[in-house]
Image (cartoon, rainbow, N blue to C red; front, side, top):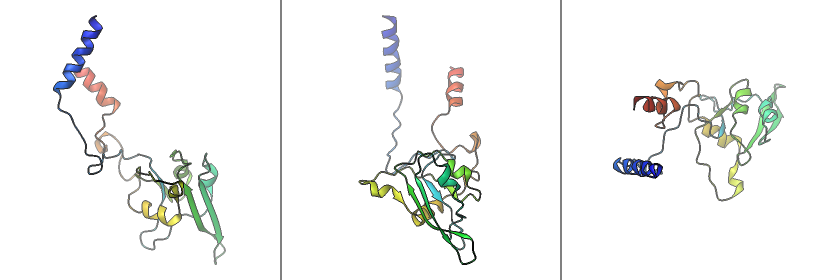
Length: 166
């Protein structure tokens, strides 16, 4: 019987608090600086060329094989990235491709609104990924730590501190 009364007490306390509603399409919730969204290609801001050196490490380390690279021989005798395809329907957003890249050509963007009506919309090419990758700075330049946290979600430390203060 006492447990039921405690449950009603929690409900009554919650009713007295003001509700915080975020109007989602107009106001988007800020993401944490190290949020792993859609993988994207970084491009040189001066020339617009992708920074990828076509080594193929990202395609080899991907556990779901969602990355596909077509390498073309350049006029200088080096490798050049001909085509880069990301099948985001297969991607599990693990970030291994960004970690293994030797020139930081792949980065995890903040893109999370990826819904489409058909599966063909989940296939991204080199130019689409380069436009997404050119919008944001590197994750290590955004800063990490509680002083640079860009989210309004409470962390485990905040929950612990609030529980200790009561």
